[in-house]
Length: 624
Image (tube, rainbow, N blue to C red; front, side):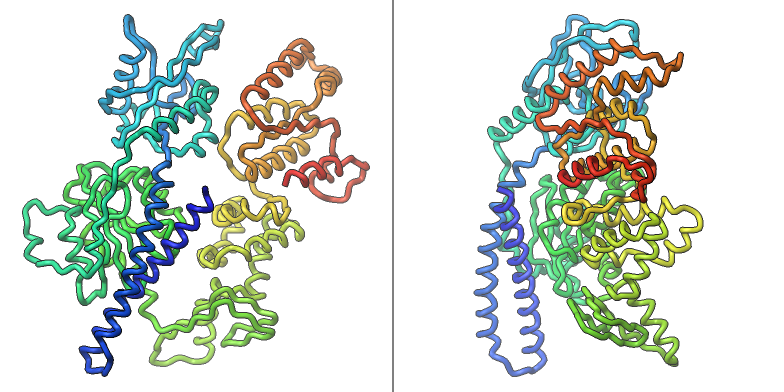
């Protein structure tokens, strides 16, 4: 299924690129003919139009396949409880609450949803009950019986934050994201029933058809007088069509979609053979992160050098300057796609700024390899360059030393040379202090696309070493992390950084059993290795579990008054978690930890105590 979807995305992107090239060719032919160059214009135009028709048909076929799969994408709407005295503090929850006197479950659902989201919804579908006994915060001395009813509804409306002092803003999460969130017990225990109910409802839910005006795949000409319409807004196609056909800017619209409310792409334009996608929003409230996430998904099927613009109506905003939520801005900023926010006055400047480097004269070398390399101040042997760009900048007076310095600065972060490798190696080595680990780190770094390396500012990092090595490691990890996860199967290495992953039941379980380990370094080692494994296999749970006998013996040897060995408590604890593990998790690995490692082993140094380190290492090597 995923292979068919990925193939359709790839073919759609290729067809769209060919389509864009054809449009540029038509413009070039018209320009050549108008400037007196002798060409058979009609014949060339006809050949290009045949190619356009062919690519249009291919795009339509693949678009149907893509829409079919993306139409199956499900989103949960959740918020984080941030009120310390509230039940399930710092857990993710759905809208809900307690029954009032003589109130039915359905009436309670409608009331709570409206109070917490301002959505007046009528159509709810029952999923399941979750009932049992538990301790509540307002009654900590005894267990109280509870019964929770779980319902679902399907809506395109966006919920509002009505209780900012009690929970965070409502956000959309996919089913896969939901599985890794720290959610309330009812949602976790009934996860399979919830997912099945959602899938069933979506299969029967009538999907809204999105019509595309394919006749608009041509240059749009607009009368500037239309801009004086009093009802004119940023979302109106007339303004955008006028902006993108500004002759002196060289923009061309080849797909204008006038549908609204589809969270997709409204307008596609070309500029210097690059694609620009526009989503128009005409709302009074800030743009939520859900819009950015769906827009990012929509443009992810296209080339990575494309630009995505979310255009808002600044005149309609209730609060001036608050065009997007903080989370939406952060999502756009860290996205691997190029996503910008702007209003109608900033539109042209945003595009000029983004593609300003294309105005310079340059020489580009791609996938260049040589035994020796010597250009200006760049020297190297056995050089392999992913991409290097030399900019030609005109100066009135310039000497050789200045020119060498200029090229050195321009290419320092672009060329994959031995010098760059050595520089990056030394910086990472200064952080984690181990050559072997650093070498593995570099092997991974060199496999990352050059776009990632361009973002590194090594001089900035070098200065930062004086204050905080941990901060630098976090910065590097943040840029490399997506590729690190993919590469760990090929390159085994041990990161010196503290990665932060979503915490759920599996980590709580590890912490409970891991507290019985004797050595602090051993605890750190186990936690680090579990994190590495779980980042590769998110649905495989690793339990670090000393045997009951080992734990009892350890407690007895401690012989502390404040830490008495409660044997029955330990037996109940082990029985409880063994039962819970079997119920909650379909797949897990139990790691019996009976050996204690010395601190030298845990730091990968020469062992002086003949520890059984191989038993640990062999297990983790198999899992990695």
